Length: 194
Image 1 (spheres, helix red, strand yellow):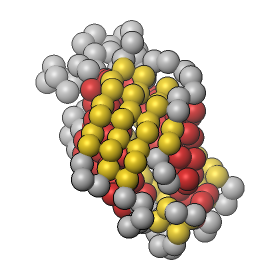
Image 2 (image 1 turned 90 degrees about the vertical axis):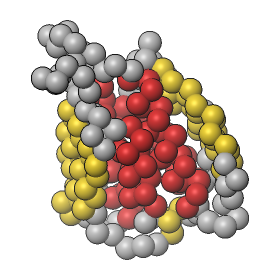
Image 3 (image 1 turned 180 degrees about the vertical axis):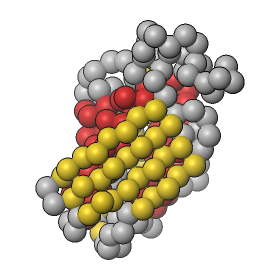
């Protein structure tokens, strides 16, 4: 089983999390940020994995530290759980319609951290979640996982739909990238390592 567990404590957040990439199950997600809980639940369900995460942060300031640190933890969990990445497809792409919004996510889980985030949406609050934190979370995931990640909003107007589309499209692209193909001997790289 490809699984990793992390505890990360700072002066701003305390996070304990476990991610199993091979088990389809409902984990326990509690971040103190309602909208983020909703998005992580979608990420777990649509990626076909089992994620448990408990975060306590300085949400009395705002959601920034909690959301960004959750991204750091998610990235580290992915990197650790994937291990040597032998046999994985490495690449994943998904285009997802979410009502009026259409989102494309493309990723390479090959060890090279980079993010392109072409998403133009209003900077507003959804409950206790700032929409601009979506880019920060995915930047933290990409750089800590060692992933090249492209997120493109083709069109859309409702912020909830746009962000939900991003999380779901990422989940499906990730599901493809981490899936094992028995035709792949070793890692999918002419360098022999990822």
